[in-house]
Structure formats: C-alpha cells, structure tokens
Image (cartoon, rainbow, N blue to C red; front, side, top):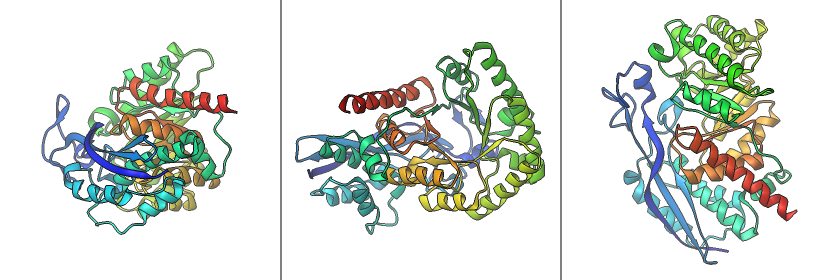
Length: 410
C-alpha cells in the first residue's frame, strides 16, 4: 500500500498556547484572558488559541488516514520549541506532503525514522510536524497490515499484543470540579491541578497547595466508592523551587509534609523546580531526591521540563534522579519515539507517564490511546482540553474499543 497524495489543512487545537514564564511572573487575569505582554518568543499575547495542522494521506487502496500536528500548551517553556504557527509553517508543510507521495506504508518505525532523518529547513517545527504525520503513518500501516494501530506498535516494539487498558490521569484548571469529576468517574490519577502561580494556587509558603491536598483527600473519603484509592498527581511548575529559593532541603521538607497530608494515598509531584538547562535540572532534582530519601518520604518526583526529546529522557533515566518521567508525546516528535521512550523508562526502573497536552486534538488523543495500549505506561493522560469528561471518554473509549477488536480476532 502506498501514499497516493498527501495534503495539509489549517485546523484547530484543543485549547490554548500559554506563556508560562509570564504566568509564573504574576500576569494578571481578566476573566479568561491574561493581561500584559508575553515574555517567551513566538507569543503575540500571553494566551492565544493554539493551531493544528491536519495531515491527510490518500492511499492507493482508496482509504484515507490523518494525523494532527500541534505544540503543547506551554510552548517555549523548559527547553521546548516555540508555539506552532501553521501559517508560518505552511511552505515547509507543503514540501513534506510532496515528499510523502509514493511512500510505501508497510513499516511504521522505519517510515517515521526515515522522515525524521530528512534534511529539513531549520525553521520547520519538527516535533509538532512529526507528531502529526506519524499518527497518519501509523494508521496507514495498520490498514496495510489489517491490524489495529496498537497491534502494529506492539509488534514493532517486540512486545505482546495489548490485553488491558491503561490507567488514565486527568487534568483541569477548574481545581475543585476536576476532583469531584475524577472521583465520580473513578479516574486512576487526579487532579494535576495546574498549580502555576504563587498567589492563587501555591501560596507564599506553599500553604495553599497543602490545603488543596487536604481537601482532595476529604473529597475522596466523602464521595469515593469503597476501594477507590487514586494516586494524587500535582504539577507545580517549579513553584517550590521559586518559593524556597532552590534550597533542596527546604523543598524536600515541604514535599515530605505534602505526602503526610495526602496519606494514605500516593503523592506524585511534577516539576518541583524549573532550571535553565537540562543538566541543571538533573543536578537539582538529584539533590532534592537525595534529601527526600534521607527523610524517608515516599513522595514521588516527576520530571517534565527539559525531558523533551528521546535523548533528554535517556539522560534523566541514566541519572536516576526521578521516580517518574512525563513522556510528553508532542515534544518527542514521532509517536514511535514516544513508544520507545516508555519502554526505555521501564527498563531503567523509572515509571513512565504517557503525557501530552490539553492543546491536542481528538485525533491525536485516539492515536495516543493506541500507543498507550502497546507501550504500557503507568498512566496515560486524558486529552484534549481541560474539561475532564471529553478527553477522558475519547481516550478511554478508544482503548476499550481497540481491546474488544483484538480479543474478537484472537
């Protein structure tokens, strides 16, 4: 089966691109809009709708497949590429569409690797573009092999075909409703919380986050069914480092206190610090992890910022400075890299999260559900958007439908 024609259209992402640096610096909000000037390159305003490029492949079999390219919500932050602007990228995207015409779609990893190794213009937003195109290539390969995309990825990873759904974690900027929704729907991990500013979500001494965790535990005890014990996951966007002046001992003391509040539930804290470089991030997280171990606290450290590409993730695995890595799929380019990263995390005794972004699309969410089934991360993020219900049902339903198909064919 071959690609007869490839086209690209300007689509819409599932949320917005936000300038994290401006928000962390205290940008004022007026309703849903942030006031003031952006701090990060590529932003025209602190919050703006995010773009998607929808790649459509017309196959010589008569089938049509597609994939959506987007950047993450916090583009430019933590060593990432800037926001994905489709109009600026269109000349390069058209060139890629021409390149794809006539390609054989028999091997997914091989196709993805070949495309990623091409000599593209340096202005091309390669992670976003590879993310979108690889979704379409995977679906095309699945059609050619008469398999589900999940089975194709499992086969190329050299693992057994999927036989169980993956725990889902949810997120929302509605910090109260996300907890109640998660409890009612028995989300495996909640609430993420978007703890991204000192004044309203963290507190000058971290007191607001501590109160929030206590409230989460109370809601689970009040409304959770018997035996419901989700992991508590909170993304704190480097605020402990900012508030406690990057002192590893103070940060470790604080995180250990948070775990006591969360007990008996497991607590996972993502991005306690955001440093300027990957190596600085590794060094600081190593100091924090050591300080936490000295205190005997079981709180889990999660890295996101600076663990962007496959090479970055390998460095964090090798350093052994975190308990979990957020494998943020749009940052890795091809979803083949996402699948590989998850397996390498497990091999390195690090729990992988198949993360992503609220700024993704329904199509990328569906294809990531297949990658999750095949690569088997500890959790997979519900996406797109921050409404909880919509993203959760897209990812959940795609997983259970796929598992039913695989079982029916056994």
